[in-house]
Picture 1 (cartoon, rainbow, N blue to C red):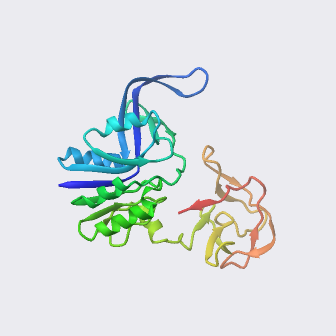
Picture 2: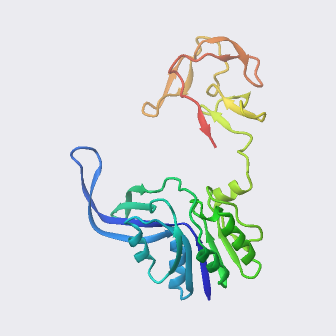
Picture 3: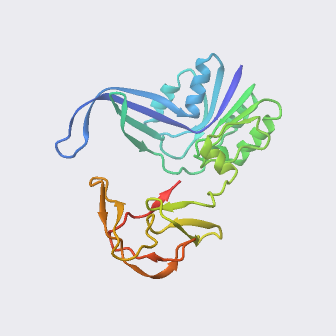
Length: 282
């Protein structure tokens, strides 16, 4: 089977080693690198995996003319490459790993790229395939109008599988299969943020407020539970900082203000630092 993979490529580098001590000049691990593994990423990884399964694979992409492109071509192995010029450095993602764990990832050349150069050979390669796989990694190749026209024309005769990206172009109409992850699917349907959220300081009673950017009503807690409101001088049990556990304290004093929902007593005033700050919860 002849498969054409169209999309953005990058170089993945794994630096493998051990970490037995911290650096004397900063509290960071010192990784003694024993090996470096280079492999293609993005559409290049898709093409290499298909080639290893025994298919004849052409990779239609764009490449840089810097020093890292030779490493990328070597990592692609048996994959036939039909490439134009990217006009940008080769994207490289380097992961430093020790004892099977990632310590840090360093990205190079991953800034937004200019519009790539699509050649006649790239367009012709799309027409000579039994299956077309479009692997978009958001670097602009699959947004090119001529390439999209070629893909849309070709999909009428062969299967077209499209793997989208949140920063990439929409799949061409009529793609046979589209394979988004959850974030990409949400972006594709323009799913709005949930209309109601709960902002809570230890589960306190909510009050209503209108979002400045939308008319949807959201729920926010401005005071902890049972803070609306008890007579002054009565003690009650509250949870203090986690380190101190439970303790008894007097309630904060009451001050005039809006009533809490469902209660006739005014909202209690907080003394600075006396309650945990509210935060968003899902």
